[in-house]
Length: 423
Image (cartoon, rainbow, N blue to C red; front, side):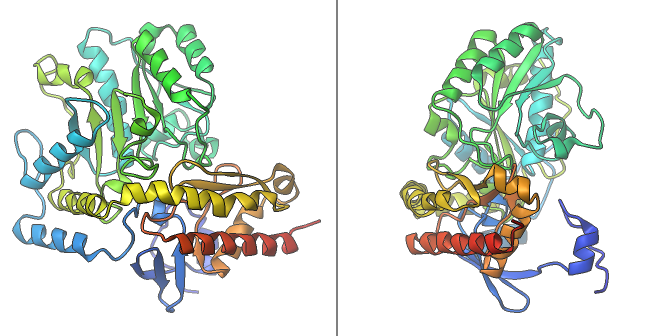
């Protein structure tokens, strides 16, 4: 086929040039349609982000009204705009700590890089510039800017770039004890922050062990290390609360968010900071903080976020997630008995991973791609994540019947892959 000029993200462009892209042209609810008119279930909510579902004209209309008045203007210095001001107030009210401040970005990777700079600048302002090390976890994903790539615990995402960010280190994803030992070995006076996803997303939808987050919060408090929760995936209802911090009962110093803040309708993100971190930036200690983005506090993006939050609240979609969590677990857990499946990870909101078995992956390393392809043939769009897991993270508007149909499609796709798999 003719070569396209469009360079895809996370893609083998030779394969796409050979086989051609899947071009999607419209969406409604949990469904999207390609240019041939074929309908698919969007089992991943786009990229974990289309929380309120596709085709929400209310969001587009809010953006159009705003663009007709003022589409964009810098928020550097003392510039602001009404949607950004309103969005910051709403985010502060939703934050899992009091007296929150909202630094608006244009996406999750921006929010991660902002946090890395913020925690280091914070300690420098307090006269402790040696506190530079940021600890992250194995299997973690924190976006693809320099900061997030340097912190990543998914090794292939770092391969080939060299050291991008100095003074970073990683610990096992499920061991609070390992975090404590790492801080002790480095010396707490050298550690700026610990960053973690409450539920690891791209690394395989890994749900934390009981009391893990409470324990790491305690460790951070006792050592003075700042606790940064990357809630780019889990924020805005994905786990059945506004933030996973609420569900797991922890109070971090910073919360990073994006994706569900607009349900992906426009790029937008935020760093929510508690009073401890924001104080030196507000009391004159820091003075001018030389950081920001062209689209920080973007006028139209803020309008999209406000309309999206209105939908979530008005339609009570977060309680809906808690109900759907039960149905999702009931529908997908039986798949664990399939010969190709090692386990099914459920129980935390609308996040599920169908993990292919170690033996099956050893026999056929291409099995995840084969399962994803078989799902597409069944009219389901999703992707492989982690070490041989298949992602399930649909929009909050999915019905119980659609969840059960989705699980049935997974069963059929697994059977197809089993038939084709090498003996």
